[in-house]
Length: 195
Image (cartoon, one colour):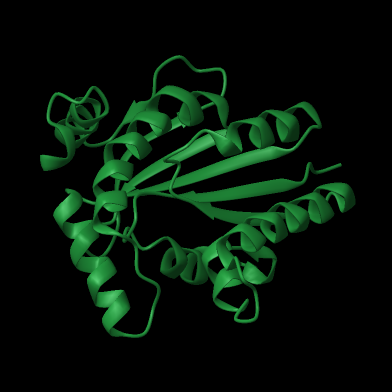
């Protein structure tokens, strides 16, 4: 029997996660995006909190039914580590697609463009804070844990492979050495958010 699959679309703010999911996920009807949930909660006094709760309720529903689903996250925190560990323990495949952009300035510009088109805003300080944390968490926690990780440079079209890593393998397969070492530098905060 084929195991169920959880697909994680991750990356810093403005990396193009939602666009990527709509374009490359074959069935995105089970795509759970807290930002989209929040946008539909106009009557709530605390839409962000309620969206977070609804996000995890939907995850639990798909998990209980062992039905494939996808989520979107910045990976700037470790919230989803517990979920990934549980899914793996239950026999799921967890596929991670990480979309990277070449610097926090691109993140800022893309968020500003999204806002100008009616999309949701992110405070500048959150964008700057999350950028290196997201990369750090990818390299140190999520990539070694997930069944498969594909890291793409989504700064321009089409996205280009940076590295792939598979569970149980100590080292990633590196496709773009220069960019991979740039990621390591950001993660170690040697170059910080200014790369």
